Amino acid sequence: MDCTAAIPISRRNLLIAGASATAAVPLSAEAQAAATEAAIVSSVSLEVNGTTRTLEIDTRTTLLDALREHLHLTGTKKGCDQGQCGACTVLVNGRRTVSCLSLAVMNAGAKITTIEGLGTPASLHPMQAAFIKHDGYQCGYCTPGQICSAVGVLDEIQRGVPSHVSADLTAQPLLSAAELRERMSGNICRCGAYSNIVDAISEVAGARS
Ligand code: FES
Ligand code: FES
Image 1 (spheres, rainbow, N blue to C red):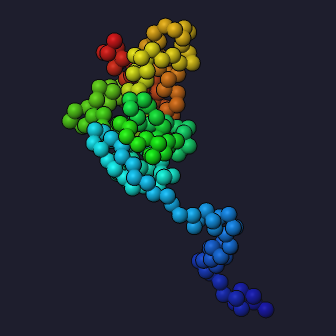
Image 2 (image 1 turned 90 degrees about the vertical axis):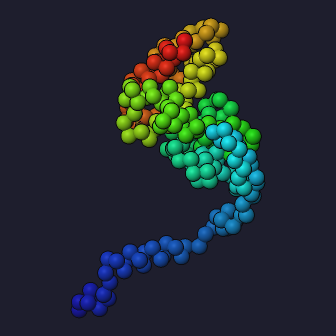
Image 3 (image 1 turned 30 degrees about the vertical axis):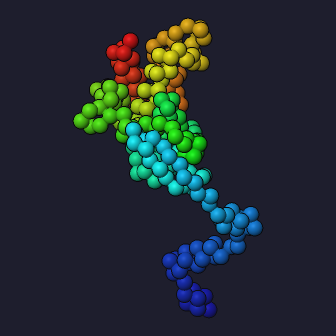
């Protein structure tokens, strides 16, 4: 007897049946509770790139998602979404912050600067101009975070904040390549543009000092 003739089934039907079976698996009690838990919505005001923005958002919303999904400032990138790549770095009250690890409501009233607020194509921030001049990027995905972080790094050095490689914790930190590499080590570049990034930051640091 020809079994395949008796039960005609195509690959497409098999996939649909498999997907249906998966969807029919009942959720655990915990998963059902989590899925039906009502969001707590709160009003939060942020000063983003010089403009006060007020949002009604789920209190679990990260600063990164508030910027990208609610304010449509997509210059700030989501890489790992768990604090490991630096792609989402923005400046919060002048300090660099990985926005994927910070809830928007924690930043109520804060001054947030994203890559869109640093400069414009017609009037670039010196760090943006230096990244272009020194080819400090290839695909560009990490670049907004790198530039925001670099601006924060120079401010940290100027304020005398030591790093892991500072030999003397009480002395003014040096503007050395080692210092810049250490301080920028939280910003990952899969294209490997690190040397050119250090060149760009060094140029801006030299111009400032
Ligand atoms: Fe925030 Fe990677 S997306 S550190
Ligand atoms: Fe491509 Fe950095 S320029 S990841």
